[in-house]
Length: 248
Image: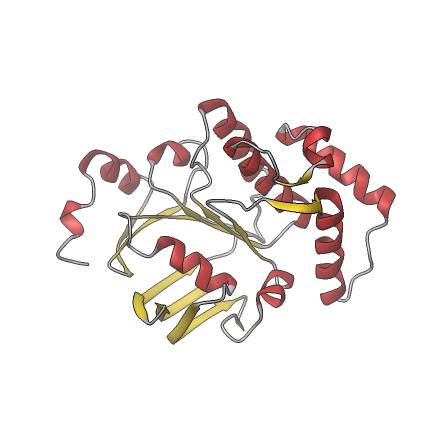
């Protein structure tokens, strides 16, 4: 589903991703782990088209379609979703208005009809209940006044509403206590399916106890330096990343 070959990404003229190659097939969840500064968040921003993250070499495709040439909203309409490590507060933008607008914009780009207000509200209530998102949260401006855990629940709530095909979770476990981590993980696991895939970026094994990956990759020095099964994450938890210093 996602194919990256020899990707190079510069940020502010500085090379961060340096020849990264990775494939994530449909139906699978892959985890990326690595030390601080390795390029994990840079990879997620480059794939989703954030301004200032310049792809200087290599390719990235989703279901065979080139991502690099598309605008961020076009990538989203193709089914790409990024759950941010630090979700932004957007004062003055009502949460439900924002999400219905986003959903219908994506549906329009795909040639699909709009979701009516009653249908959207029913869908919203159903998803919110499963994730412990209160109606009070939905009535506020987007993420305004939320705790870290509430912001992460809201990210997964958005993901469930938009129903993307490829999901990138950038340190979704950051700032979550154990109970919130379980709720968020259950929401993520409910979105797994044979026609979808996920890339989970994390520092810690604890997230992968709840969101079981099919493959684990180590990112160091801007490229993938090791790959393996779920046991690789356990080894990293015990031994750290020192053994990859030379490889990076």
